[in-house]
Image (cartoon, rainbow, N blue to C red; front, side, top):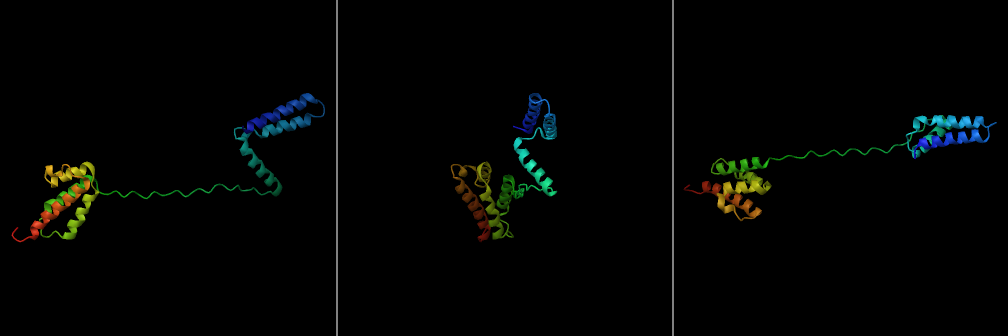
Length: 169
């Protein structure tokens, strides 16, 4: 139900008063029509909107102070923490393969090697399979579980690195 229904009710009541008691009630019927006309700007509002509106109007009439209706405090918008975008699988593969190629360099430090090997743990699925095929020379990677592939890749690079640490190589 909206304000238009109340407005119509006042108009109908005014028409009833005019028809029922023709003399002396014209003033009351005119007042009801005037009230109905005052509702015109609000006719599309829901009826439950009318109650607090009339309460505010009454308080203003009584106190001459326009009451402020508290509104629901807006919840602060949660700021999304920007998603940290790490290297792509292709970038991870490229970096690990670069380590594989450079594992025999004497100036490469063990911490650098271990930091790069940590990148292997970020790989899964097809990128991990692709890296395993390249580092483990194809067939060895078949049938291995994910963690076995990761460990095998890391061990292969460590072994390659170890060759430069042994005398005679």
